[in-house]
Image (cartoon, rainbow, N blue to C red; front, top):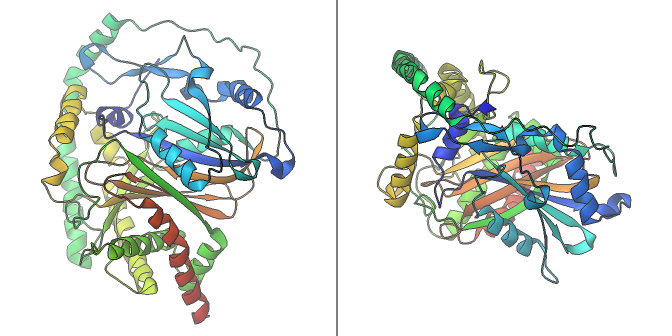
Amino acid sequence: MERLTGLDASFLYLETDSQLLHVCALLILDPDADDIAYEFDEFKAELGRRMHLLPAMRRRLHTVPFNLDHPVWVEDSRFDLGYHVRRVGLPPAGGERELAELAADIAGRPLDRTRPLWEMWVVEGLPDNKIAVIAKYHHAIVDGITGTNMMMHLCDIEPGKRYEAPADAQPVHPGEPNDLLLAAEAALKIPGKLGMVGMLPKTLGILGGLVQRRRANGSGMPLPFTAPRTPFNKAITPHRAVSFTQADFADIKEIKSAFGVKVNDVVLAVVGGVLRDYLESRAELPDSTLIASIPVSTHETTRHERGTNKVSTIFARLRTDIADPVERMRLIADDNRGAKEEHNLIGADFLQDWAKYAPPNTFQLAARAYSSLKLAEHHPVVHNLVVSNVPGPNFPMYFLGLRVDGMYPFGPVFHGAGLTITVLTNDGDMDFGFIACKELVPDVQRLADAVSEVVTALLKAARDQS
């Protein structure tokens, strides 16, 4: 039994019927690349032989009585691999568009909280004898880094590898927690919640440091609630739309080197160009720049040992108000240097320190009220979208024995920010995943289609100056 941290549990509390807080990944697998025979039952059996490497995938939630404290993880005594792994086929002549529609449909369905919080859909019938896997995990059990690490346990660096079933294939289940004991422990912890008061001086100190820095430097990362409103900055529905594409990572690195910026600067410049193209085509481009919320991993810097989600946030200007792609990227790079300095002042543990005091009932009631009353449409825009850049493997990988051709990530979307763009480097490619509220971004495919044009423009500028 292990108690969720406040930050992990907050992804449960903030979830509503329309704001689904799981993350997805679409993997394209090519059995023919190494002449590996694919058969669904063996594919599922190989996953079963590796489940002992992924204890989080066998645990389910157990709620503390009256929600007096955060839930605990317990071993699922009725774990059924067949429930979690589903088989589906694309319609005849189906391609990327149909696969994206299927991924969007799966992303728009909630996970069953009475079972371990994940699903894996194996999709057959793709062109060229390829198959796809659509994996879905709740954010309470993965963040960008832990999600990638979890996938790595299911991957190898050689094709067709098979694991032996562990000797203790039938785990011993410790039984259900004692609810009376859980409630008593929660009651004893109530006085400790007053520690939240001690966070106030720390928070005021951080704010004071930020004010001093801005007085000295004259600028900093954009503040929340200062983003312009766009069509996707409204209350969301549960319906999702998905698109995906690849860029050559060598092109991204060439642009980076030519202009002396970071890979993340190039990624944000590409995203800014894509969003400018999309909004301009619809005559909806704001005069001021869009602002993205960017998750930042704190796995290497946090003092907190427990928990899955170890993350903080940076706000970044995407400079969508700038037409020239090179000027846009240089301004983004300048902004990012200042944003990182301010992020260091805030500290890696700020979100985790506050989240541990989150009262479950209050949090859940507030989330439901915010959703049902569509409050996201009645206050200034916090941020326009989420953009996440996750490092991945730079060599060929084999998922349960089959060559990975593409690995496209999709994060959750939020009320007030109905679009999320996630980027993952994978064996010489940069894989872009776009997920949105279907009603707010009716042509999400246009975003994916624009990536190539924006990268090409930056690459041409990089080569012209050399």
